[in-house]
Image (cartoon, rainbow, N blue to C red; front, top):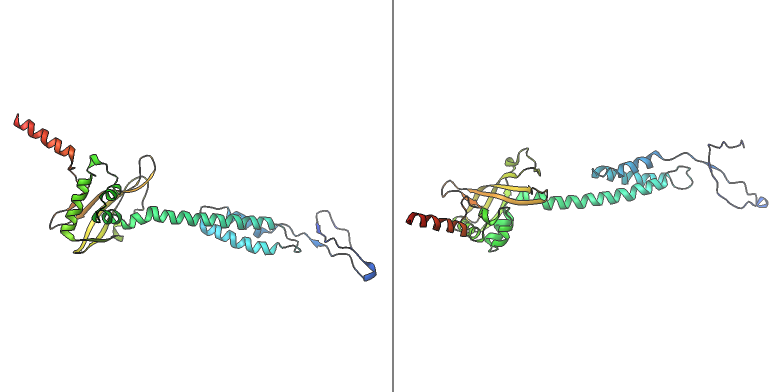
Length: 250
């Protein structure tokens, strides 16, 4: 047997030799280098921005794990193990983030004023107010919200559902820099109405908002309904009217 070169590392299994039983020296397994598939799997698992790459990292890592099993002479087994662990963890986090993003961002976009109207017309006016970004000085008051819901009930009956009209979204994806404006189909007991709804994606400080800035129910027969109202009705408006009346008396 020719002598082994230093660059040709050997994996020798240490076994006791028994010449009397005809034992022969163990066969040396040449080291074939690190598995390229193991390296590839680790790289794919570390690309966190795309779930497809992390899944591919797990799959290739599993294949590399079996390729680099003991006795094959192929290195990189720990790289494959690391790729599997990182890939599974990254894919799990991406799945959690996707579910959160759908519930926190996309669901309010697709349903629009559904949650606000459901709460308001069931008597929970405070919950309806919280669904709007406007403050009380902008007309988002308990009295205005109750009046708006009473008028909706009088005109159209009980509220049932709301859905985004697909054509209204077009090629305008929601962005944090400005409000999302879409058209919605509102279903009531007495019929279906069309509404325009603007949603604040993020506040000026960068915090996720997803609250309604304006809701306009279009009604060519009885007149549009808007919330918050263009001219707030509340204590400030009453004081203003009283002040104007006093000035007129003078």
